[in-house]
Image 1 (tube, rainbow, N blue to C red):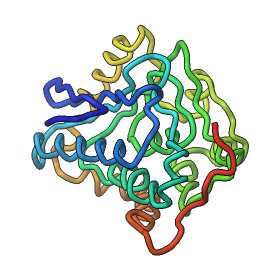
Image 2: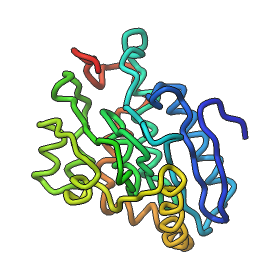
Image 3: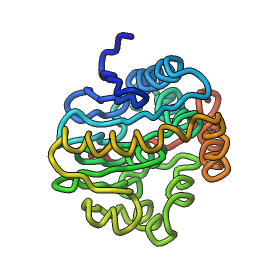
Length: 242
């Protein structure tokens, strides 16, 4: 398996996808499709009814992901329909548990990318989490589904309507992340691997994705409805850029 902007490492039944798209792991169509391909390759290697878990991490302590490459939409109006939306839909329908290891800053579209994972571990020492579509003029049908389904109403409001910027401690207190980890990138990885080994057996009976859909299936459906759609506009173009 060959990839341009990521690497895959295996630790028994736990796979680690490390994002390497410099400088900030911004999501383009090609990058989103590469992550989807990596997820499908891992799924094939694990096979059905197997223990398994996937961790998605950044390559350094500065950035996990800073969301979408907003410049791509200037030349490709279908960029998100062909990349970002299918990526989120893939994670929400994935047959194995997933962990977002937020090694650094998590901005913009990286927030729903993180929320599409089952678990989130955030850097305890540095990095902010913020989703500012209200400041950028961005919207797509279903943009609020993951915050609404996974977070308390007041926290979802802070994320979507107030563009609040969370520290790790604040994100843990507000229930956005499940754990904080220290020790730099490698120390954080050890924390994620411990969780990964704990949850990997939950895929064994082959119903993990079906049970997840009972909780968050509405979000997956909204994203599938706008994936690969070219006949109509399924989102706004940013009026401002970070």
